[in-house]
Length: 102
Image (tube, rainbow, N blue to C red; front, side, top):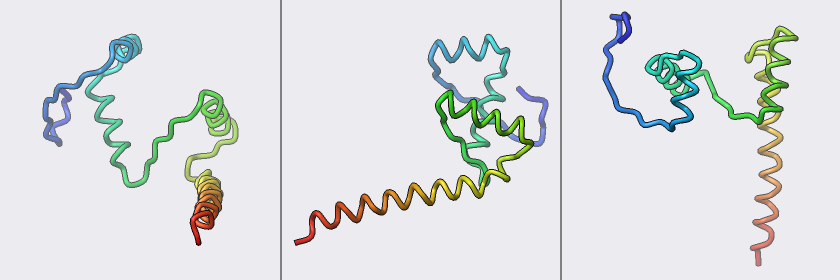
């Protein structure tokens, strides 16, 4: 258990795959701390966790490390990408709607 006395903790039983256990063990990570951190990220009001392909992750890491930008600097570009996605979906919906009109 953590020495952090400002929080109450609850013990839970978590099932993970063998390969996940091995990776955590190989890296010397604390399972409880890792899970708490992931839960904090998941329920944060300001964080979004994205799953990226290895190529996209490499580009992201390159941009962050070589251009001195933070996620906050990238936010307007993420919003533009989401807007473009919604515009494409809107076209798909319009096509579908027009195909069912009589």
